[in-house]
Amino acid sequence: MTVMDSPPTEPSVCLEPGRQRGRRPEGRDRFTISEVAAYTGLSAHTLRWYERIGLMPHVDRSHTGQRRYTSRDLDWLDLVGRLRLTGMPVADMVRYAELVRQGEETFAERERLLSAHRDDVRRRIAELRSTLDVLDYKIEIYSDARRASERA
Amino acid sequence: MTVMDSPPTEPSVCLEPGRQRGRRPEGRDRFTISEVAAYTGLSAHTLRWYERIGLMPHVDRSHTGQRRYTSRDLDWLDLVGRLRLTGMPVADMVRYAELVRQGEETFAERERLLSAHRDDVRRRIAELRSTLDVLDYKIEIYSDARRASERA
DNA sequence: CGCTTGCTTGGAGTGCACTCCAACTCTCTA
DNA sequence: TAGAGAGTTGGAGTGCACTCCAAGCAAGCG
Image 1 (tube, chains in turn cyan, blue, green, brown):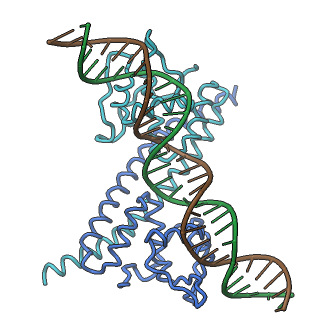
Image 2 (cartoon, each protein chain N blue to C red; image 1 turned 135 degrees about the vertical axis):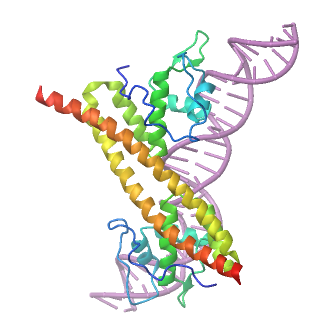
Image 3 (tube, rainbow over the protein chains, first blue to last red; image 1 turned 90 degrees about the vertical axis):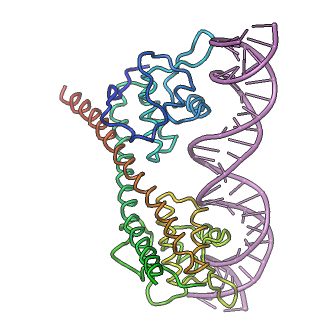
């Protein structure tokens, strides 16, 4: 409805290779649901469901009523996919989508919402890291035991 | 049933402060379920459920049948809580618990299981980090806009 | 033209990880 | 010894995020 606030296709900040199923189709700007599914790794079911719950900013339709996604939609799905993979609840993503629809006067609240999620992500990185230490410790115990029994 | 394979109460590798609800009770070695719930942050319901599904190595009982957890159990729950917080499925944790019950001949498979999880954790750290970049980028856009409108 | 494959819908179903309930019994403090 | 507040069980219920189904329309190909 209003201007979308994504970085205009930034290849530097990109899902690491192997994470996404398809390369982004270039040229056209009216992708079918299965093309988008292949690109995002989300199922067509999930894409329709996202639309139903208000997580998509109105997807265009062909003359026969089939969905046609724009590359702007793909940008949005990139962000949504990222937020999802980093554990943001769907309800919060829907809230964010509403704010985007409402326009510029919601910038402050969008900032709060993303900042809260960023704090969350930072906490989880710390959590994962400290678990990594425990895993290293235990794995070493097991592999020491294995090497010892192989030598015996 | 067999020897537990946890580092013997290592205070250096510890849940970051604020994460765990209670400080570990010292001295005694027969904790009630609510003490354990307060310590681990898991609910008593969940502790009973973990036992039902085979995620606990047989908890001792009082003469009237109430659960009495040892500090060895707390060590185990520390590990389980960590694996849980880092996204290991309950089914995998049950599998690991079975391997521990079976004794030393399962060291190699335990190592495989934990190594697979470690790879997973590493992947997720990378994922979180790359999302952090995107969040920083967008938050900066919003706060720039806010500061600009405040100056205007 | 018929076949295969893909897209549409609302609503129902699934899997995971809890979470709660009813109907008790046990423990602790006054 | 009475009462409050713990603890016990099996089984049912919840919330989240999909995931699938049935029934039908649409598009490309030999």
